[in-house]
Length: 252
Image 1 (cartoon, rainbow, N blue to C red):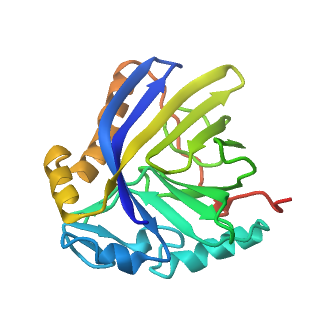
Image 2 (tube, rainbow, N blue to C red):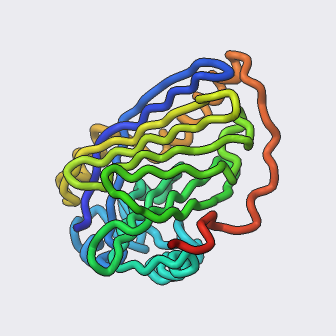
């Protein structure tokens, strides 16, 4: 079912300089097999068309406007994972603009059980990378993977992620922890409660979270300025990974 999740994002950095913040946010959870249903759910939301709120397939996956379901099915097949329904958790475009630091793809197997998760990451340099990881135990989903993609200019590449994820039901929660050889560096929490994807809800969010997608980008640079003023060292950006998706070679 297509729906909204309304909640907050919290960040806490422990080294080299302590820093924390949180802000209210919301996401859409879209069934890639029912984008037509999402398009019809509200007069202020459209799929692949301009509106107050919109979702563009070209913002995700191969970023060429082609079918996202076809793309993710090909990616999971490379990892040896057979999938059925796929749901994408992401922030919509608002007045044509969106910046999604992290979008999450929930990939069920043909029986309806969660089989894989793709964590799609975007940095502020216009680059993208995804981590596609199989699910062995969905309660909760725990993933660990070496960092492959440059995100923050204040954290080195030599780090490892740990994802703790609850699949979206009435509530949704993801905790991302980042550590290096000296221990914990950073953690981020995304959490939200389900709300209906309707015109009324979207209009209320327009008032309660004004210009959200613009504020996300502004907030990232504002917090970076705070870190710089605290004396955090700036790292040069390395080249992006040659592959667009990091994944196990074979799921077995």
